[in-house]
Length: 349
Image (cartoon, rainbow, N blue to C red; front, side, top):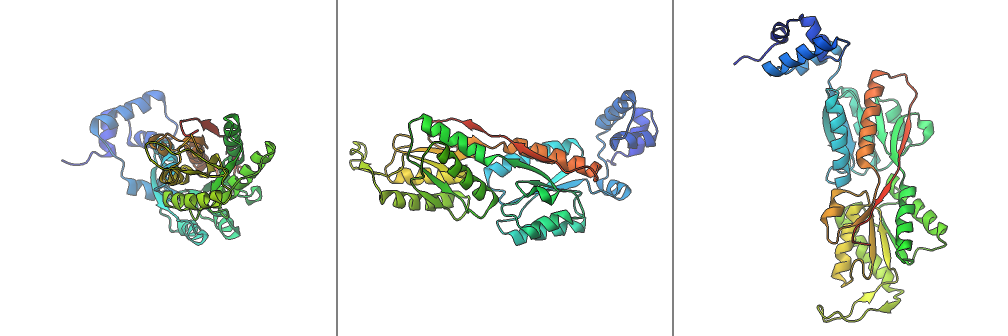
């Protein structure tokens, strides 16, 4: 069976080929004409020839989303939101992983000159002058889902990590927890730096000091387990007291100096949760635990994890909208959007 053509759509709709092209390309058309064309497209099962369309209008109708780790649930949420927006505008989304190194982020941005996509949303884990320069000089529009200096002059959408940390600390204090520890990811990353500063500021606001802090090697589950072991070892150096032997374990477990921990993301938090369980500590009885990102993982672990929602879906949507706007108008002033956090309280606190 032959593939339906644009001419066949025009005949079925009772309009010209030019009118069909106008509707399919999103150009101005009457409501009646647009409805007739869409009805004919649906009836015939017409699919535009992407290659011909790209050659004609000078676009690939593909956009790229680049994230550090496609296995991280927060990026999956962001990806879904970006895809929803761009697909509605007639674009296909290509997702790629940059990894944690700036050199790979820079290489990806510079590679956009090969013309395989019309624009890029990038969520960089690390930012330096080379990356900013490559974004500024990129041949296609770029939107940063993250934090770069305002002087960079690029469209950005970022989370408010300091406010998220303030929500987490306020919640723990309201639950009577005052000996709060912090499990961060690498502090030389965009999220690591922001969350470390937010944690320090939030404790200061409550006239508290961190009982213990550990910097994990990455923002992964495995790094959370390793960082959790280091945090427990550090906590045991200043053990406050012992808990009674639990009948179901038949042994006593040493309670660490901290009675609560905030982890820089949910993967780290769940890794830490496993280490707390292995040490015979109860969550939240002995240690209350808060994550960040409020990913699907937060609801799937046991006990369900209290987590700061940093608006990953909203950031994805806003970044996609900024990219589409930049593609249509490359001369408009860059926008800097901040998505504010909320706290999802669950059984871990």
